[in-house]
Structure formats: structure tokens, C-alpha cells
Image 1 (cartoon, rainbow, N blue to C red):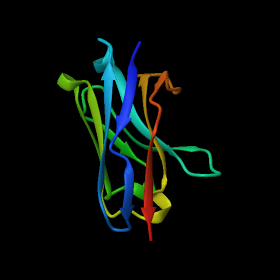
Image 2: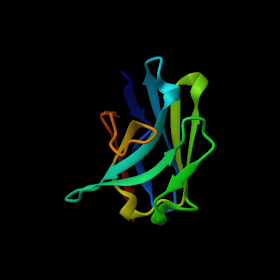
Image 3: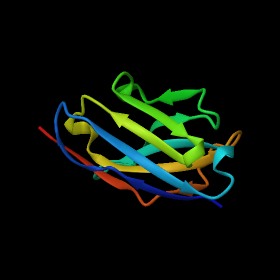
Length: 119
């Protein structure tokens, strides 16, 4: 069992930066692929970025490549999303999620943190 709690969301102007954090609890945190997903108003949840259990492999949705960076610190049971050059279309609730390698569904989710980018 893994519990996830996001923080770091807020209101920022276009072109600004934010850093999201996700604190995990549970001794199996290091076993999980961690990801950030987001859901904008009136839209479905979409993948943003993921990082392998050891932190060596990362993946990004095309629209955030070069602007967002995912990282993790397994010693602290934490995963981060550094976001630069934010755009109004990045406005969404951002969720931290965990899944096991080899599985496509996410087993555990945080409650989400709101990111609002003003133009």
C-alpha cells in the first residue's frame, strides 16, 4: 500500500515556474514507477511524465518536453515535477500516481493539486 500526497500547486503567470512535490508513504515506494497526470476542466485525465523505480528512465508527454522535468528521491519517498515556461493550457489538477512495472494501470493516486496559469 502506498499513500501519496501532492503539494506545490498554485497560481502563476504565463512563463513562470512551479515545482510540484509528491510525498509517498509505505515501504514499497521504491518498487513503483511514479507518474504525474493532469486533468483540465472539462477534459479527461492525461499523462504528463513518468519515472522508473530507480529514476534512470523518464518519459514525457510531447507538449511538456523541454519544459517539465520529473525526478525522484527514493530515500525521501518523494517524486517531483519541475515546471518551467508555464502556459495557460497547463492549467489543471495535477495528480501523482504509482504503478508497478509491467502493468498499465495506476494502483495508487494522490488527491491532486491545482495549477492555474494566467495569461
